[in-house]
Amino acid sequence: MNWETLPNHDVLSDRAAEIFLEAILRVLGLPTGRTPVRMYERVVAACGRAYHCFRDVVTFNLDEYVGIERTYPGSYYTFMKRHLFDFVDINPANAHLPNGAAADVEAECTRYERDIAAARGLDLTLLGLGSNGHIAFNEPGTPFDSRTRAVALTESTRAANAALFGEDVPTHAITMGIATILESKSIVLLASGDKKRQAIEHLRSGEITEEFPASALWKHPDVTVLVA
Ligand code: GLP
Image 1 (cartoon, helix red, strand yellow):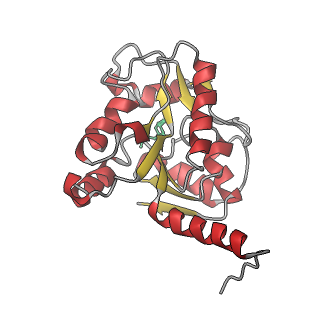
Image 2: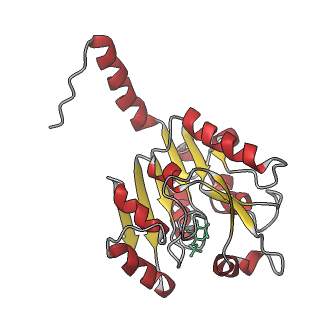
Image 3: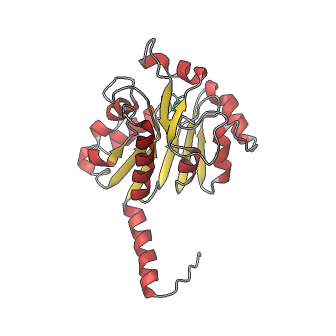
């Protein structure tokens, strides 16, 4: 039994309302990539529009490419529409992705952080894993106190994500920072397949280093890693 002693009935009521609202208002951090595709299929199958699963849900995607319109086939916005948003009753105003085509990318990153804060922070964030240990687009060497910002993609990450771009793979992306992700109340990381084996073993080793971004998750009290 966890006990919280509050100074008076009003503060007690604030706290009770907070617990109440946390149970019904969910703010989710969402990933893209090949790994979560089948998870989205199952979510859509379980929560077709009729079930109103997403009526009160707010989502923030982890990242988006810089310099492409959101309607471009390779954009993460298009990915999310194709795999989730078009099939559930989410209010489009509640489905957030960074705007990679923003004229002022820095202002866009600040706005994104502000929007997450205005939604009272992320409750649950789902993550994929890059084979070099990146989470979202936080590449090796990213400070653990990083926040949403524009980053240059490594050649290996560009190659891994080239399929939808042909010759013109974007060079930059906007990504939530590691600190942004770690502020999520709980985190679930998904990793599957031989290409992730080495990264999973590195994560499992427990060594915490900025050279391996996913290792920051060891600093968080509520992380679940799903491996297959
Ligand atoms: C991209 C995304 C990451 C994702 C990673 C792994 O770099 N920005 O968020 O986790 O790819 O993708 P996949 O699941 O396709 O291996």
